[in-house]
Amino acid sequence: MLQALRSARELSLGEARAQAAELAGTGLVGTLVEMKILGVHLRGRGIAVSIESAV
Image (cartoon, rainbow, N blue to C red; front, side, top):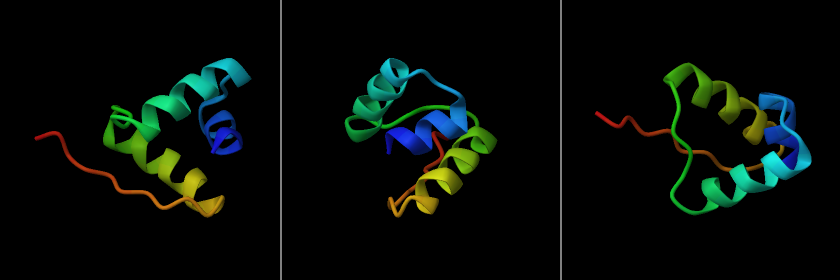
Protein backbone atom coordinates (compact mmCIF):
# COMPACT_ATOMS: atom_id res chain seq x y z
CA MET A 1 0.00 0.00 0.00
CA LEU A 2 2.82 2.38 0.86
CA GLN A 3 4.46 1.92 -2.55
CA ALA A 4 1.15 2.53 -4.33
CA LEU A 5 0.48 5.70 -2.33
CA ARG A 6 4.01 6.96 -2.87
CA SER A 7 3.91 6.40 -6.62
CA ALA A 8 0.39 7.75 -7.11
CA ARG A 9 0.78 10.85 -4.97
CA GLU A 10 4.55 11.40 -4.86
CA LEU A 11 4.62 11.22 -1.06
CA SER A 12 7.47 10.81 1.37
CA LEU A 13 7.51 7.59 3.37
CA GLY A 14 6.12 9.38 6.44
CA GLU A 15 3.31 10.98 4.44
CA ALA A 16 2.48 7.62 2.83
CA ARG A 17 2.31 5.97 6.26
CA ALA A 18 -0.07 8.66 7.52
CA GLN A 19 -2.31 8.31 4.47
CA ALA A 20 -2.24 4.51 4.71
CA ALA A 21 -3.48 4.75 8.29
CA GLU A 22 -6.22 7.16 7.21
CA LEU A 23 -7.16 4.92 4.28
CA ALA A 24 -7.41 1.87 6.54
CA GLY A 25 -9.55 3.83 9.01
CA THR A 26 -12.07 6.32 7.70
CA GLY A 27 -10.82 6.31 4.11
CA LEU A 28 -9.35 9.07 1.99
CA VAL A 29 -11.26 12.01 0.56
CA GLY A 30 -10.49 13.60 -2.79
CA THR A 31 -11.86 14.33 -6.20
CA LEU A 32 -13.23 11.45 -8.23
CA VAL A 33 -10.27 11.68 -10.60
CA GLU A 34 -7.77 11.61 -7.72
CA MET A 35 -9.44 8.59 -6.17
CA LYS A 36 -9.66 6.71 -9.49
CA ILE A 37 -5.95 7.27 -10.15
CA LEU A 38 -5.13 6.10 -6.63
CA GLY A 39 -7.43 3.12 -7.16
CA VAL A 40 -5.49 2.09 -10.28
CA HIS A 41 -2.22 2.17 -8.34
CA LEU A 42 -3.69 0.24 -5.40
CA ARG A 43 -5.32 -2.39 -7.61
CA GLY A 44 -2.01 -2.79 -9.42
CA ARG A 45 -0.55 -3.87 -6.09
CA GLY A 46 -3.39 -6.34 -5.47
CA ILE A 47 -5.30 -4.16 -3.00
CA ALA A 48 -9.10 -4.17 -3.23
CA VAL A 49 -10.58 -0.69 -3.72
CA SER A 50 -14.04 0.77 -3.34
CA ILE A 51 -14.72 4.35 -4.41
CA GLU A 52 -17.87 5.95 -3.06
CA SER A 53 -19.43 9.30 -3.85
CA ALA A 54 -19.94 11.68 -0.93
CA VAL A 55 -23.10 13.03 -2.52
